[in-house]
Length: 285
Ligand SMILES: [Zn+2]
Ligand SMILES: [Zn+2]
Image (cartoon, rainbow, N blue to C red; front, side, top):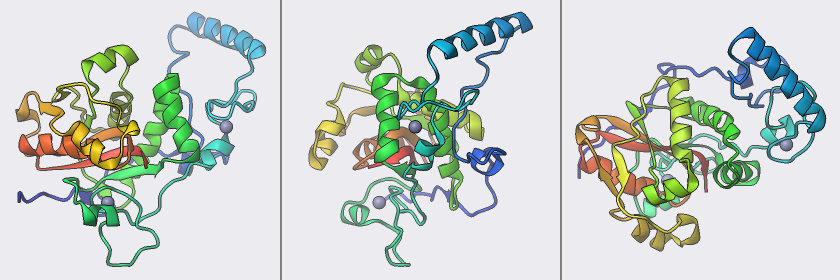
């Protein structure tokens, strides 16, 4: 078997991502901020934007994207503090392969029961939270209700998760691609949006044209674990393999459930010469 480098890094040697959790002066901690720059441009354009926004706020008071509760007047947050504080974040230590939390298991355990039973070709994966409650609402709202404003707050959580010790190492991020047919139907790939936002926050390059989905696959959410593996087996191919050769890569997606999709991506990338492949997701099923 090919020797794979670990994608984790000892504490204290990684880039830093500004955290509202630690820098918030208003005590709201984890509340995400609106996408910056909406009111940019000339002073006249800014005034116009503020007037229009003000009128809009009077007609349609801003509400939380997740629970629809009215937001505090003048707030820059899209999600209320109550929802964001309820995000089911995961606790260290994490499985060295898939990133599932190992909290509550024995001290010497490095891999979760699922990975021990059926090893995945993943190293150093991480998820910001469990796929439950508010996290599940975030994923559904982004993917199916096109709430693209959630990309920034979700990416912030993922960037913070990647830097939580043992910090993930990556030479580049690779979003899980959609098949062109589905990409046209949905008009956006949430994995690509998240990867680019994380890349901007951490200064990590994003390679979004080297991994391609060769044929359309059924949605994984409708399948059981064995069928998920068969569904994505051989689904991915590599373009311009020289970009992945010898590099440590993190596959980015919104949710990792069985790991079948990330594993299929990893197999294609490792076959093309990647030094190691992990996964970074917003939620872990
Ligand atoms: Zn809310
Ligand atoms: Zn695992």
